[in-house]
Structure formats: structure tokens, C-alpha cells
Image 1 (cartoon, rainbow, N blue to C red):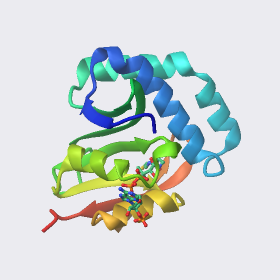
Image 2 (image 1 turned 120 degrees about the horizontal axis):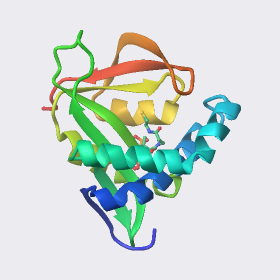
Image 3 (image 1 turned 90 degrees about the horizontal axis):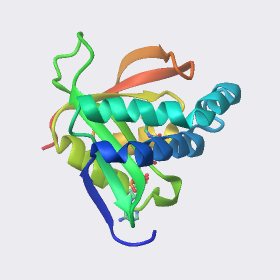
Length: 165
Ligand SMILES: CC(C)(COP(=O)(O)OP(=O)(O)OC[C@H]1O[C@@H](n2cnc3c(N)ncnc32)[C@H](O)[C@@H]1OP(=O)(O)O)[C@@H](O)C(=O)NCCC(=O)NCCS
């Protein structure tokens, strides 16, 4: 860690930093978890990832990032649930922390900034043991729903929680 990590709302100028952080997080977290050939293709497409973030930041304010001495080292996104079969209003769309920061409490800060103590749902790779343990510690339990994630072609499970007491 270089200095004090701050969490703030992402701005349009953060697209480049977020794109780079996103790919680094995928490499660090998903090597061995998703097909390597698919991961290699995704990791090589930095311009495409930055462009996606430009579009997201232009259209959907409220994305959060964690910054350490000017470097984006994590991010979180939450919003309206995309699942029609759920009565829950909120979904955690994404939560990523650079590997060097795992276990420092940064994930906790980001998830709290994104959804507070509210009821929410999320999708996570079934075999992503670290993330599942983290979410379980934040009150999430699998609700039995599964789907094939189309991007990396791995099974995802849904986890849900009620508002924390
Ligand atoms: C899942 C993820 C976001 C968690 O973030 P994190 O920063 O490691 O989370 P935290 O540090 O808050 O918590 C992790 C552990 O550190 C412990 N911890 C919390 N605060 C701490 C602190 N200040 N100092 C030391 N340890 C701390 C927690 O108790 C927790 O322990 P546990 O795993 O035994 O429950 C992170 O591991 C990650 O980005 N993984 C890769 C991407 C990913 O899989 N994202 C989910 C996609 S659905």
C-alpha cells in the first residue's frame, strides 16, 4: 500500500484507471478459475475495457472506486436488481480489489459504501471460494439459483441477504 486509500465516486476521467484495474483484478482473481484462453483474450483488450468504462461512467453515475496515491486499486457497483424473480430492490453488480489489498479491509469498505447494510443480491462464480466466504461474512447466503456466466463460461450462483440488523 502506498498511502491512505480513499473511496470516492468514479468520474468520467477515471475510465482508464478503472479499465486497467478491472483487467488486473480479473487476472489476479480469475487465473485458474476460468478458461485461460478466454482470459487471455479479455486481458489483451485494454482499449475495449477502457471504452466500456467510458460508456458506463457517462451513463450510470454512482460507481465507486478505491484509490491509493492516484492508482485505482478497487471498485464497486450497485444498483437496481436485474432479476425479475426477486423481491429485493438492490443488486451488487461488481466488487473487486487488487490482490495486494486483499485482507486489508478494503473489500469491506467498498461493499459498505456501495450497499450499506441493505438487503441485496449478487452473482458470484460458484468456485470463487474467497469471494463467497467474504460475502457470507457480510450476511449473504446462496438462494439456489445458478446460471452459466456467458463471458467466461463458468457457473455462477446467486447469493442474497436481508437487511443487516
Ligand atoms: C472478495 C474481495 C472483494 C474481498 O475483498 P478484501 O479486501 O480481501 O476483503 P476484506 O479485507 O474486507 O476481508 C477479507 C478478510 O480480511 C479480514 N479483514 C478485514 N479487515 C481487516 C483488516 N483491517 N486487516 C486485516 N484483515 C482484515 C476479514 O475479516 C476477512 O477475513 P475472512 O476472509 O476470514 O472473512 C477480494 O478478495 C477480491 O477482490 N477478490 C477478487 C475479485 C472477486 O472475486 N470479486 C468478487 C466477484 S463476484
